[in-house]
Figure 1 (cartoon, rainbow over the protein chains, first blue to last red):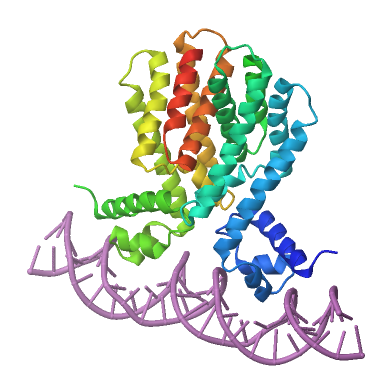
Figure 2 (cartoon, protein in one colour; figure 1 turned 90 degrees about the vertical axis):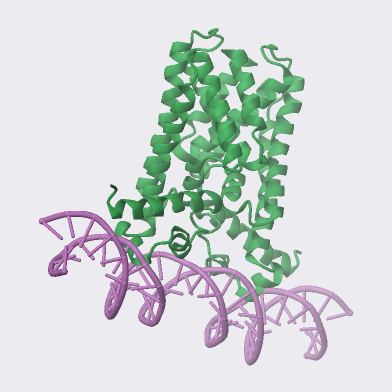
Length: 187
Length: 187
DNA sequence: CATCAAATAGACAAGTCTGTCTATTTAGGT
DNA sequence: ACCTAAATAGACAGACTTGTCTATTTGATG
């Protein structure tokens, strides 16, 4: 049985995750969070000292879940080249599901990256994590060597970043899939 | 002689441009704008009906200035390949000057892209403008044809987007220059 | 110099925000 | 069944928000 506090914490974070991503951190008030999470305000402030602390927890949790989902998607494929391409497919699908809100880390960085050092730090770790996954797959891929491992890693990382961002501007995953096809030709 | 109203409008927009970019739109209040622009509140509301209208004007003006600066930088080079690479150098330098705030259009989109259709529209136009400049230079470049013109255009666009975003996360232009060197090898 | 639109300072309204506090109810462990 | 820690509803403070309004001063033009 889950302790009561855990249930409340989960309700808060589930709601914060949904609202912060869909509306933005600045545009989401504490009052909306407690109402939609269906908890009392005092409960929220018992679990999180300030709204900023809730933001930090949101970014950390998003980091964890982001890569859990990604690893699950990658592990459905065995070929390293296929895994690299599966990253693009995964994000294309996720952007569609999340209505093309773009990258939650970039969003958080744009809204509140400078407001608390913990926020920026967690965002940087998430991006390094992403690059690291790509790097390891590139090393295993046996690609054409049109580019060095390092250059190919960087190019995949940057085109992925760019295409997720582009998805949030044009409200389509077209650029993510375009990036996939281009990278495929370089593998 | 400039009409008085133009001077006031310029002061407002200069200040809004600086504050919206550095702090974010949500984190910048009207009161801070009028104080730092050194104008009266009634003057601001004579020139812009609402804060949202000021945001729209800010994005439009940023669009104009962004590409004025870019064209100026590009036109210092004659070779089309060199022009393409100059795009990266230009943005690397600009990010440094602007203290790695990232892309103003993406920032505006993340904070307020859904709040007014004019904002999203202007952002989309700015991104299409960027891609169009790249497309024309690729067509003139006589590149190696490792990729089609269309693929190369897309890849340059996406790696540029990704690297400017990355600059705002890691507070360095390293990824912009890394993207430049990789694209150079594909030209 | 007179005129008249435009800029000014700043009070004000009405609402929102975060965060605190009190008093009550709930629910799990012994 | 009791005891205790936790969750609840909701009032409240204090600061901040956008936007309006009034009364005054400025400054360019005929």
